[in-house]
Image 1 (cartoon, rainbow, N blue to C red):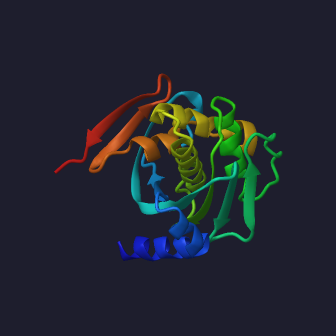
Image 2 (cartoon, one colour):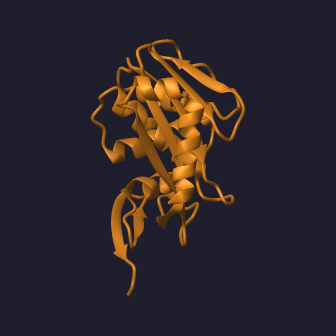
Length: 206
């Protein structure tokens, strides 16, 4: 847990002490990374996939803002990304900010977003293939939903992640990654039948 504690401290410092003190109702979103023992890449064809989350994660520290603007800084990439709510979402740029723009685009297509926030994001990525992009989108969608008081299900968030990647980012992803992130349970293998999106939790053997 010391790794997470250190990363949270970095995020709060990056977000700024003023924001943290001014908004005690600020919060932290934890979005875990995942591994897929069997079935990777068959989710696009409606196949059966399995997976589980691991002790690596994306963390998003959030402080509400009175302005209708989403502003995010990153511990891992340069610059800061800003999206003004109510304006047309800017087109894809090809940088790390595309995932914030994608999350705002798909959520605002179904719900009214009126409250902004300031945030700092940081990943804990030991190697490739752990679905950090889906974890980032899940984190943004959870934060946007909470700050705008939107009652949204995990199933709906999973669908919005796929839309964000397919329609905005330009990645032909399925439902594997976000399903593991959103539905995995401790000491279980999560099995998803992508033909009907049914989910089964398989207990680990003794």
